[in-house]
Length: 111
Image 1 (cartoon, helix red, strand yellow):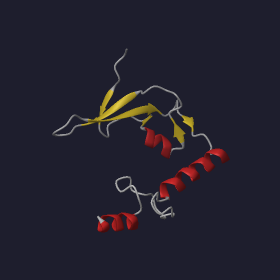
Image 2 (image 1 turned 90 degrees about the vertical axis):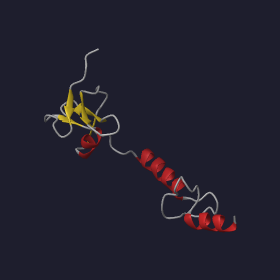
Image 3 (image 1 turned 30 degrees about the vertical axis):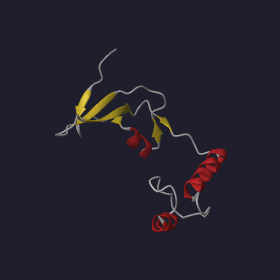
Image 4 (image 1 turned 60 degrees about the horizontal axis):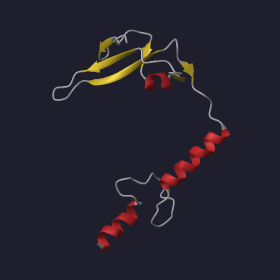
């Protein structure tokens, strides 16, 4: 197994990109292996690592199909619906609370 080239933070050569950078360009890794990695040193912990992919081997992002769009809308509705009062909160329910903020406030006030 060959070792990956390692570059310092912000010093990667052109032609490499992270997943987020590929997505911003409308691309995806498309099954290719990691081509290199970036390392950002930290004082108290190990270095932060970001994996790089080759831009020339990246494929375009798949278009959103009506079925995927419907599934995503259903999932987001479930994240916004309070399990306690069954209302759409208008925002994603915090997982730390497990319910909308008004229900959480009334629950903590009652306890």
